[in-house]
Image (tube, rainbow over all chains, first blue to last red; front, side):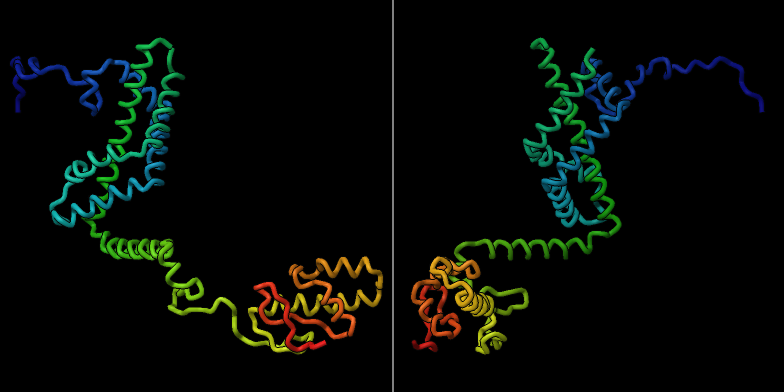
Length: 122
Length: 179
């Protein structure tokens, strides 16, 4: 009924380290801060979304996405439909996926990204 | 741009590309997970089987060793039927009344009606220039080997000269018209 007005020292909150910057990418804590700025510019200008859609379209055209889906299906068949997690599938696809992007696709995206960086350089 | 700046840019670009790729990988994984959990991939297995079969069929068609064995004349269509390369149904030519195979009908008509025109033209234009011109290469018919000097002789007796048997090997035989 009555709130205690005693001063309560929450030691835990004092000793907690400052929260990390609001990104999901762990690397960004070790990278130069300009990556964060670039990222913000990418997102705010809408370029990140456009780049992602372009990449997705190219990967679709060359059959990369179909290959990845086939890998997922094969894994799901082995492991059983109800035992599969998204994390599982990410780990199944990631190594093969990153290695099998066609060079032309990668080059095209890198070129666009570099162009964006150049356009935002001060 | 100075050197180190460019390297930095390259590294940044690669990193950003990696980000994008990871993001797409997660999307694909998430979608596959959803399909698996909802059991929507029941139909996909059948589609996969069909795709494999069609790829096999395509490979068989594209295979050069195949077409040399199975004579091009006997290509099998999707119903398993074979068709001879020259259509064999017989029709009656409305111009000359002859029985002609369907596959030979068009060239027959060219000569049948073309020669008829030639005969008509020969009567109206009796100049040798016209004769020579049509005897060398008829503008009507594309088969110029057939128009040689002997054909004009045959035309002169008024009978319509019609194509003989094997036009494809270049000979011009007329088993019917014995001059």
